[in-house]
Picture (cartoon, rainbow, N blue to C red):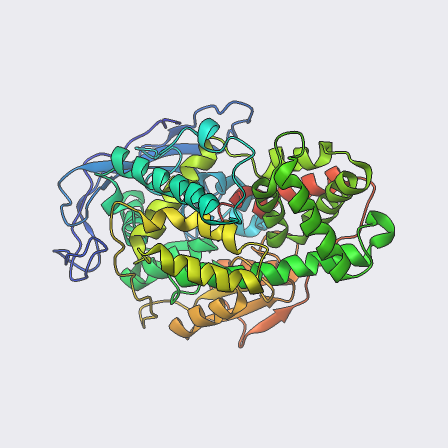
Length: 532
């Protein structure tokens, strides 16, 4: 993976007074102030094949303790990048804005340029905007990989909805294999892949940057990471923005079950939208008819994968993206219609290559996703529990229940037992917090955001009345205006406010152009890692 110019060595963070995610109280001060610190050495960013390197982007690494109970022991490297503020460091400079896109397992360095470009200039020019690859991710060292993606993800994969014990054993074998490979390759790292340790890495980054406080913008899982950081280091937070908040009480098995229900509702909205445009797609004039057409297509792909590539599991992965954003609905409905009505598989295969094909980058994301979620909290170890829960949920929510289950199933076999999640909470030392949320979000349901709000009662929530995941910096001026005001001077609305949703998409002749425009937005940057 990418090796970055610039390194910080010898950072020893002495933290203590709180129980660590490794299960042992950490010695030292609860503030996590480093005993010694060297400044970050910024340098040019390495070239990435097929991608232009911005002249304004700088890169570096920060050395962090593998185990915060042993701050002078083995260390690893966290890769960071930065777009510097245009104003000098005087009264107009607002410090560092640290950004995280979620996951766990997503690269924060991929978000930096997007945030800098999409924020109003009067805001972005006053912040050093810094992205980081959490431990194990992307350019951080080590970068975690567990399987050869070309072999493990070779399409078509087994159908995620098992028909009988034999098919279930095949799927269980895949999950156990993945967990075993991660355990064999990364036994020394797995105990230390936790949200809490990533939050402590953020504190190390803050100290290395020489900032007394930092501001933070986190999406999806990144809201939970921000909440953990705010709980551990409240006095270090200048501004805190949570966009699409995770339910902190459902970490992580229960939150995935809740997602199955919310993605089902979102999928049915897509089917209803397709029915309303039956004159274009001719897949059915009612949601019942389009639902029949969809599951008939899925059944056909089980025995006759499109192009020998898109089977039912690949179809699940493709259309899960439509649960995150309605901007892709026209292109997806057209690909579906072309396949069903004209026998043309090209568009469906193209959707697979754009949205569901797994490469080494995606496998790294997945490995860290599992590493964090399986270690953060306890998961059922008896498969009978999983089978019973998924069988019940599948009756209510057939769209994603089993595919989501297998995505997380390696946690049933994980080499390291799950720990106890940090109990996030507000503090008098925290500034007021801004929460941004869509009411119909499938990945991070609105009810979970309300639960996060209860843990931070001083927060204010701006609610987008739509259903897309990730609501800021994608064109909703009402939302973005509130975000800009808060980042500028910390101002919040006196009470929670609602913003009208962006209009639902309409069928258009140039589907690919519409989709490409959307993917320049935040969801393209987030990469739709997993099903958070």
